[in-house]
Image (cartoon, rainbow, N blue to C red; front, top):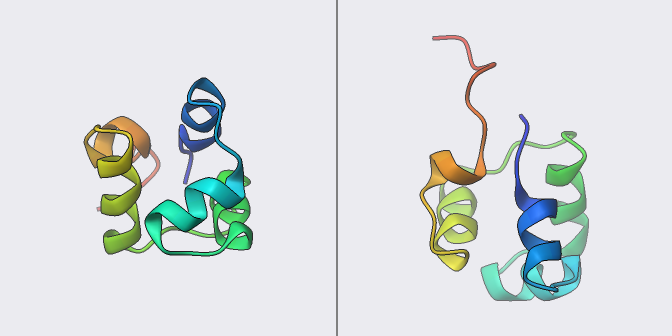
Length: 67
């Protein structure tokens, strides 16, 4: 799943480690989400979106998700 996390991190001058600490996960998880090897849980997606004061849909691209 595509995300805007890397773009948002850079705009806010945050490292992967700093974001991970803020949302209660590991740097490796943030890396995996950014390179589309891992899909964030709903709770983690919510925490990331809330951190950036955005909605989940503003951070995560659901256009490829099949219903």
